[in-house]
Amino acid sequence: MLTRRGILGAAALAAVLPGMARAANPGIIIDGLTGIADPDGKEGDFALSPRAVRDYRESGLSAIQVTIGEVGNARTGWDAVQEGVSIHNRIIDASPGTFVTGRTAADIRAAKVAGKIAIVMGTQDTSMVGLDLDRLGIMQGLGVRVVQLTYNLRNLSGDGSLEPANAGLSKLGRATIARIEKEKLLLDLSHGGQRTIAEAIAATTRPMTISHTGCRSLHDNPRNVWDAELKAVANKGGVVGIYWMPFLVANSKPFAADLVRHMRHAVDVCGEDHVGIGTDGVLPKTVIDAERRRKQAAENRDRVARGIAAPGEGPDVFTIIPDLDTHRRFGLLVAALEKDRWPAGRIEKVLGGNLLRLYGDVWGGVSG
Image (spheres, rainbow, N blue to C red):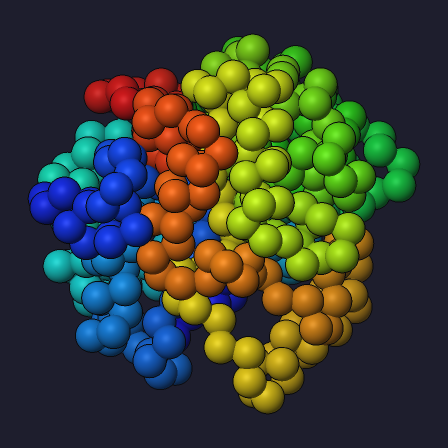
């Protein structure tokens, strides 16, 4: 039905997630960067299949942030944003028993009580805005709540993570950040170059996020972030989301232990009030058959041709953590964190409490 880079309950969690039966109830779970996917969906479908409905309900999720439009410096960026909003609104309308629109922290709390999942819409670049900063106000009115400043390449706001010049933030980038804050949108610095991230944090007056990244001091990959910038996000009240991506390890094949290692390091650097999750994957289990291998190779060729493929990506590199590759992954993560001697309160914060607080702080209304 949908792909990560494309279009992209009231009962206790222990009752629906057997893996959590002996674990702390993590309360609200938020995936700070993901996409909607349906293993039984067909092209053009908007309603979830019965299996997808079951998987999402059993996941324990209360909110997900999805990417609308295209990533990177696409020529059709503004049109794609509007189309992406329309598509996700149709998905929500087609599965009202599963999804609701997430515009406030209160929406997410209500979704948790109702046993539904709030969809928070965000972008991965500002190339669709460019010089027309009024578009940020239009996006806010359309329901967009998170705006990522750059993708991997340079745009008019600043350098992305793959730009060798590491030139940092532009004057327009500073103006863009100021307008993002004025519109009460959440600034996301994922995919930014080191100087862009550092200078953007310094330019902000409100909390921000790096929604999906890893710790560069553990693995030196340009998609990961150095400790100084991770700490700077925390110092301004923001949240760093750790992803479940190949960039966590040198061989591009991370396991749960590697994810926990990055999460532990992020907590050591930022404090337990400033770390979250942004998987940058989709919920269903990835079935790696001949067709899936063909699609992965084609997608990688496209990203290489566009110059947006990061070190560690490849035609046979799948964005999964094998021992967490199930829709019950968050229950397994809780068990792994408990094994690592994480206290229950910290687990609850990192799995969703911190992002809920951040959303409330930035968007206004009811805080986390």
